[in-house]
Image (cartoon, rainbow, N blue to C red; front, top):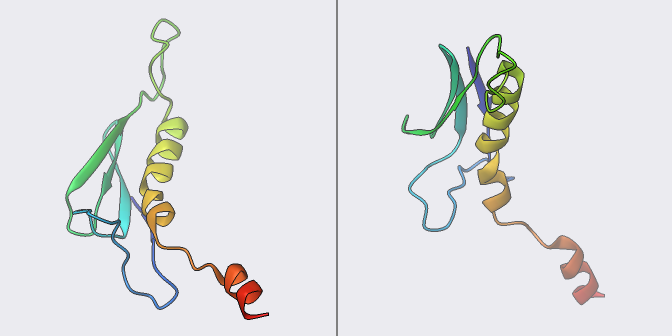
Length: 95
């Protein structure tokens, strides 16, 4: 199973964070007992491990849902690095 999260500009060109070597879009792949986040070139950027049935003694284990949510959030990071248009500021300056 592959979840795809795209970080694209309005003109649909791929966005790369400044000084970054990790092209977008980043994808989340479910593997045995972990979710892997990969960049567009296939390089693994992060592994998020989980236990199907975490026992109560291991407080540091993630559930499958927690690992999926963290991996999905991690895969969306390039969206926050993308240059944002400041249309509102331009409207104020033009007035």
